[in-house]
Length: 71
Image 1 (cartoon, rainbow, N blue to C red):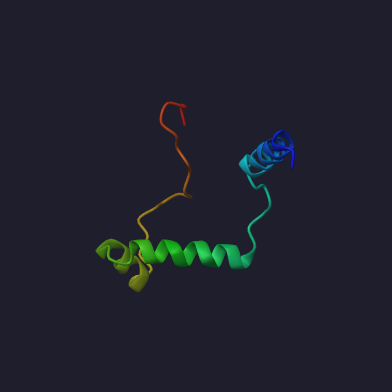
Image 2 (cartoon, rainbow, N blue to C red; image 1 turned 90 degrees about the vertical axis):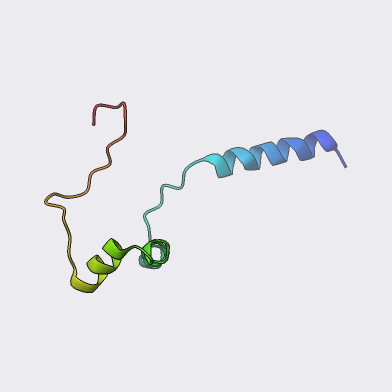
């Protein structure tokens, strides 16, 4: 067994898995993400209010604003 070849293959796999997944989310992916989000926030009274009554305080579509980028 060639150790250098094995190390090179592992490094290649690390490089492949480090790349972001650009595939669009499937409906089952979105469902899983939403379910996980609901589980995390289940104890929040504000989240329960939103779940029960469909209350939303946003007047605009959500936008990702990163600190230090001017957005």
